Every structure is written in C-alpha cells, then in structure tokens.
Amino acid sequence: MCRGENMESKLIIIRGNSGSGKTTTAKSLQNHLGHGTLLVSQDVVRRDMLKVHDRKGNLSIDLIYQIAEYGKDKCEFVIVEGILNKGRYGEMLNNLIRFYNQRTYTYYFDLSFEETVIRHNTSSKKTEFGKDSLRAWWNPNDYLGVDGETILTNDMSQNDILQLIINQLQK
Image (cartoon, rainbow, N blue to C red; front, side, top):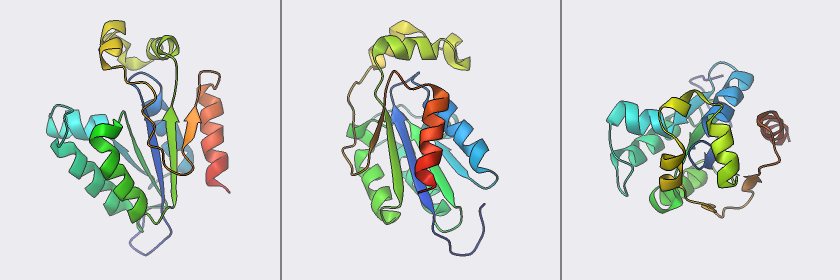
C-alpha cells in the first residue's frame, strides 16, 4: 500500500527481451501484491507518455527513474519492468538500486529465441509485431550483473516465475 509516511520500500526490476513475459509477470505481481503497488512500465513511459525512440539518452530513462524514486518510502513495492537494455538503462537501474539501499530484487528473462516467440504468440501484443521484429530487437544475455540477479529460464512457467518472486519477497 502506498502512503505518505516513511516505510521500507522494495524495488523489483523485471527485464528481458520483447515478448518474453515481463509485462504479464509484472501485472500479475502487482495484482498479487495489492493496491498501492507502483508499476513503472518502460513501454508506457517511453511509447505512450513520451513517444520517444528507444535510444541512448532518451527522455524515458530519467522519467522512469523519477517515477520509481517517487514510490520509495511511499509504496511498499515498486516494480520497474521493460526490456531496459543494459547499454541504455544500466546506469539508471544501478542508481535506482543504490537509491533503494540495495532493497532490490532483480530478474532477467533469459529465454531462447524460440521460447520467446512461443510466449509472444500467446500475448495480446501478438498482432502488434511478429517474429521478424522480435528477431531484429533480439539482445540475448543482457544481464545487469548485480548481486542477487535472478535468471528466469525456458523451463519456468509464468506461474513458476510469479511464485518464485513472491517467495523471494517474503524472505
């Protein structure tokens, strides 16, 4: 729950290639965690709010940081999700991790291209772009390399991933 008083906020970062299941996972997690859980989606900020291309230095980088910063000490959980390419967003994400005093849970969808296509074809975005776009945007092994980064793999279902994150948050 978000409130105006100081609380120990937890930052959850969910990253990976387009079509891997990040948004589905983040929305399911937000629903599970309840009202007042702040979800900051890269697509919403970059494409819907600002309409900028995903290039180094684009305006969404600072705005994602500022929205996530706002949630600290107001919301128990702040979820930042998106492709969040390390080359463009890595410095900002590392700054957020420091800002949250290391109370951060970081996840990376490390799926094969084939599994990503399968998952994408079950999503609502399957008509927006297809396999050729996924291939053009493909950026494998884009780990942040931060302590505690959890790698999510092909053999994990959406439910497995959600349960893993929930269990880690309860520790």
